[in-house]
Amino acid sequence: MSVNTLDHLLAHAVDAAMVVLHLTLDVTRLKAVQQLLLDANLSLPVVCRVDRNDLDLAVEATQAGALTVLATDDVRPAAWHRVHAHFKPSGTRAPNTPVRQVVFVDPASQHLLALARKVAQADVTALLVGPTGSGKEVLARVLHEASGRALGPFVALNCAAMPENLIEDMLFGHEKGAFTGAHREQKGLFEQAQGGTLFLDEIGEMPMHLQSKLLRVLQERQLTRLGGQSVIQLNVRIVAATNKDLKQAIAEREFREDLYYRIATFRMRLLPLRERPGDIIPLAMQSLMQQAAQPWRLHPQAKQMLLQYPWPGNVRELENVMRRAVVLCTDHHITPAHLMFDDWLTHHMAAPKEQASLDAPDFEAGAPAWPVAVPVTVQATPVSMASPVTPAPAPAEVPVDLQSAVRLNEHQVIMATLASTPSKAEAAKRLGISPRTLRYKMAQLREHGMNMAAAC
Image (cartoon, rainbow, N blue to C red; front, side):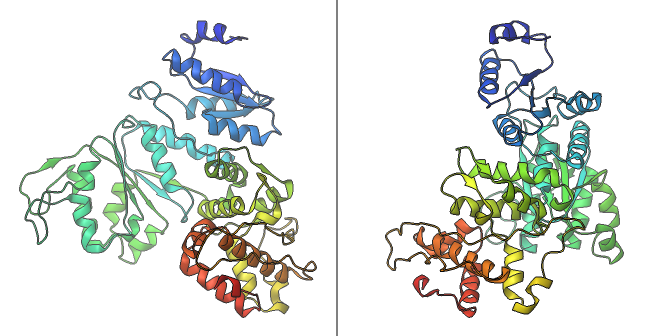
């Protein structure tokens, strides 16, 4: 049914399954509809239709809470089948419970999201496989929030980040006096996740002796705390993730085959970012919106650079690149001069000058040439600190080769960030790198003849 006013919408919303909203200029109409539904205590998904060429508005609508966005001229039945598959409401979700805003724009990502939402409705274990930084925890949260356990806790453990002697205690908990220093009882992550989801990231790194204990818990759906006697019944869904080839790990006797088949009831593979290019620009815009609430724009050449880069660090690297762009940009319009790519820059700075043109990133055949970012002068006002840092002066002339342009650009980014922050630690944080990496880059720039005296 077609309606033209908010009053007309309210009169018919009770009998509606969803609201389809046409947007043209901004998301004002979307926010008005959302407020109307909230005031009326109605929980209806809102699908927005946006001009196919207005990608910024589509991203803004997603950020504002639209459950999905379709092109205005997209009348294919398959598109609406995906809408119903993706956003079928869960019977146990409370009215107005917020839904996680995720970016699944590329066709491959949309297919994965549809599968995830179907798997979420079945209370089975799932194994997420994909490279580091590809968004496995995001998908795990989608599985949780689209399931009947959405109102329960989501508890995560990185099995590679914890010392081996602590993982068992963290997973299963302990009783008071179980070991030296156990002054009180402690619930493990399994108990903390009761009624919800336990996400075991990098499960391929779990020690073998713990794999057997985990298998037993998954089989029996119960556990006993360290030093305890009583059996605790569990009501927890397990979602595991890994960037390793577990079949190879099984062959090398590094992972239990029976545990693999226990956690891989549904196995879902996340593609590296370079293989789902449709997600790159929406993810970039989402990252910009998270840094500041003001509207952001991406120059067409900047979009082209983002689409051409191979993204070895996947979504995490993209987020770091956009954070650096926010540091450099003063007018909310990201241009090529604001984009700094870690691996590509480091690769070129470490290469001999005569080989620089031969060691460029290995793009797909037929991709346009990499556009050269001409260094830009960044104006920054030094803050009060013991040893003020002065921004690097603008170059007297445009560098004659790509390697020189890269070095000067990174030099200016580092100096400008140091000038606008009270410490090197804060500068490293704003650049999205560790203090150790910042020190290394500064030393590397000195070796190439850059003037880093002001930063000492």
